[in-house]
Length: 292
Ligand code: R5P
Image 1 (cartoon, rainbow, N blue to C red):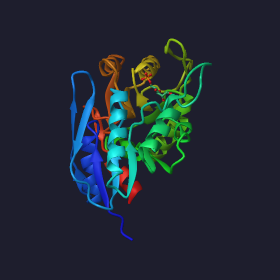
Image 2: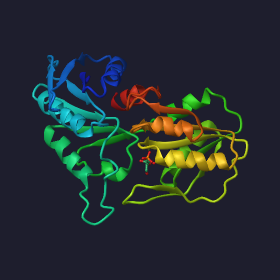
Image 3: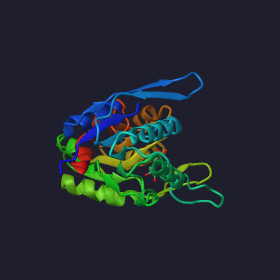
Image 4: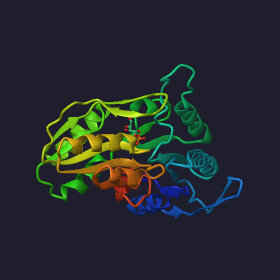
């Protein structure tokens, strides 16, 4: 039986939602959001086509809790008309709080998963989620799609000579390996530590052979920019040629973008899981592909 889809996007992911709808040739249901002066959101949406699987698209970047509550509201209202709801949360806020690092910490990711399920989501689709552990908090079917092939395609077009992919930490080694293999180049991994109390980042690697090379520093999330700033400064000291910074989710809190450039990055590229000036890579194709 042919599945009928309809797409509703929250205010954080309108453009991406429309792109997904176009790719799936599915109707896009407009959701109008008004945020009151006290921060409460009021959402009104149009008629949902009967018996359709409704794809609710919304990244939960800052204001994280507002965007999350909007997502929950849209899902719980849409489920009344839909045959099924799939929650597409390209950037999943709270994914970095997927386990207890220090005693007494609340694992908020598990609360988020329970809320999305309680609202009525029957499947969850995310893009390059920070960890598989975060996704494991969901009991419903889940899918993590990767933006790395599309990011790599962007860099392939740049035809960089003598390129090397760099991960700022060992946790990103597999990502860097995949990126490098798509570009037919090598990769290295730096050693990074972060003080769990102050958030301060330190690059612990001593020496790497990057002399004269064009580096692509790839991470999943750039938040304050601390990790890529420290890594860029370190790589510049090792006399590399240029540093290109790439990530799936560009949060760029405060003036992170300016600080990354000041550290010596030639260009910063992210995807439209979070719409920014740096979002040169579109993930609607890979998301639509996972749904077809
Ligand atoms: C950490 O393990 C993540 O992969 C990112 O490296 C981190 O979240 C980036 O945060 P920030 O930009 O604040 O250093």
